[in-house]
Length: 95
Image (cartoon, rainbow, N blue to C red; front, top):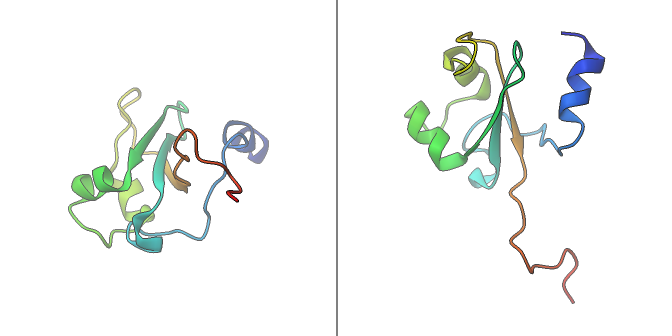
């Protein structure tokens, strides 16, 4: 897949590139899984992904090799960590 197309479907979100495993940063992030073939995207909480992986120390590369897309049935997933959304009513800069 070319770089321009990849940037187009990931440009609207902030990606935490320093996170590579499920137990990094105490698990305070959400996990976004995107199929490279059909661009189906699904978001998981860290707890849901730990249950699926059966390990807290699994890396994203290990998980990407095992996950199968529900639409196209291919094992071509890309896994990235995205920040948890702030709850409603919480200011970005509280005083």
